[in-house]
Length: 194
Image 1 (cartoon, rainbow, N blue to C red):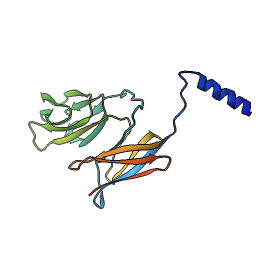
Image 2 (cartoon, helix red, strand yellow):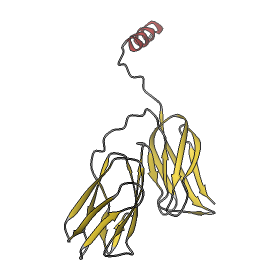
Image 3 (spheres, helix red, strand yellow):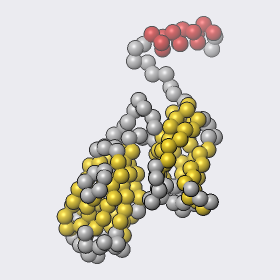
Image 4 (cartoon, rainbow, N blue to C red):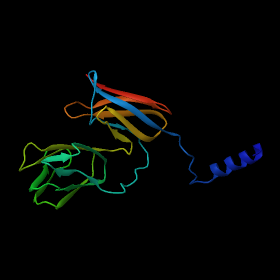
């Protein structure tokens, strides 16, 4: 390709009002720790003001089985609907009266399911009125860039726009951490609670 061809293509792209210039993106991988030990179920999300927020392609699921919620921590983007199927052998009553989305799905039997639209960012603590030992969290974030740590504390956040970005992190029983990361290929993020 000649220099003239490149200049013409660039001029055409700049002249088109709806032309989109691709933005560099990178995956951010990291580890979450509490003190010196890696922890599971830590949620990390990266603020991306102005980023496209695609509508979730499908509902998220917080299942009920063996008198527990699965997963214990669910992270979703604002605007996501969450299904609460009863895959157990008994009736359940799913509700949340704390911060975040307030709801009460009432009592429902095996095979039934309730659905809640989580429209705004926040943390919802979810319980079952019949089985007080059942507890879970739905963390709603206002970003399409988030991840949750596995049993070894590792997480990956895919396709984050490159550059200096603010990130936040939360874990059950911990406070929300706020810091920055320079997103670029190979960038690693270590999140640590005292």
